[in-house]
Image (cartoon, rainbow, N blue to C red; front, side, top):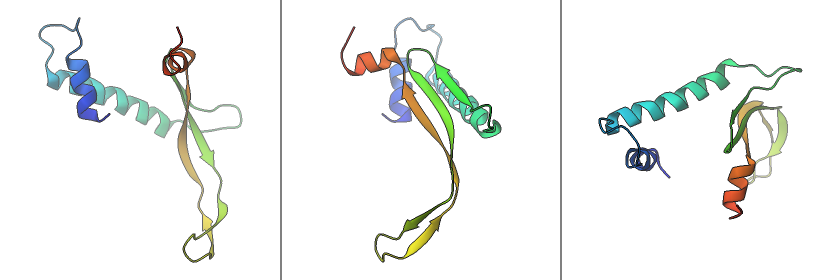
Length: 104
């Protein structure tokens, strides 16, 4: 699904206010993703805490730190060093797992 498809689906949902425009829906969706991204950029991983964003019924995003490691160039076979990086992990919630597996 693309961003445009998501916005279109939300815009066509029943129950939204009659004066809600596609532009307003776009601004809301962009604001939500921007806030979540800013949260993960600003939060630090420490020994005692790991930044998490939980959306009940959907799942939990977790900030993860990966250390530097040795790797190999698949074309030449030469060893190389892969630098440390930060990424996000995702664990689906129970309700999402059930929907994926068509359980009620």
